[in-house]
Amino acid sequence: MPPDRSITSPAPERPPRRVYAGPEQFRGDEVFLTPNETHHLSRVLRLTVGDQVEVADGCGHIFTAAICQLSGASARLRLLAAVLASGESPLQITLGIALVRSDTFDLIVRQMTEMGVWRLVPFYASRSLARPENWHPGKLDRWRRLAQEALKSSERSFLPDIASPVAFSQALAGDEPLKVLCWEDLRRQEAQRELKAKPHPEKVRMLIGPEGGFTEKEVAAAQAAGYQLLGLGPRRLRVETAAVAAVSLLQYLWGDMPG
Image (cartoon, rainbow, N blue to C red; front, side):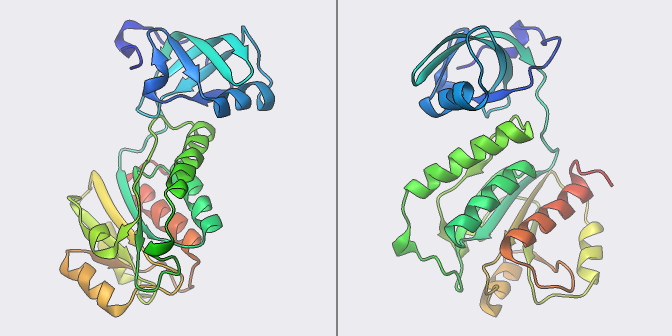
């Protein structure tokens, strides 16, 4: 595990580059990078022994570190100091999103990491083109790698949790005090005003449907589970656009997006 931040002092200046290393890659005051991160360090960032970087563990810890060994597919860094973690919203958003084409979902993973989503729950809706029998576990590994890349570029300190795909009924479940389902057939502005009038939540669960939208049966099931319906305006949006619009609204109302 990474050293306790309390025994280190904040770095006076932040290095301009950041790498990712999971907690299991820390050994005392050293950290060992994966081959992918080593390639990024040496071939993309063009850094070498003696240069300094920031290391994020995805669990809220960020450190400055010096490169002390760099060879082939391995790199060893020495931790220098803890850096005050930042980049996290006070609002924990769990976003359930219906599975779409692989390239589109890759984009969603990147964007939602940048937007500060806390947890991403892919699910199968009635009108989803992706089906459970076609699921491959390698996709989850890819999404997590994409989230790691987005964490570095967006300077977040926590890596969003990405779940394996579940059924719609499972995506409905959660202990969040506020639950919202984005429904493309709801165009009235009153729904947004009703959402704004809600007490300030610390956690929100929001669901976004597939290209063909939610069925009336799914909408009814969500309402029975305590979900508030929300429209995103008069235009019909693509799934990836709806995700950005919906999360932006939540971050504006209760998160860290400036007005």
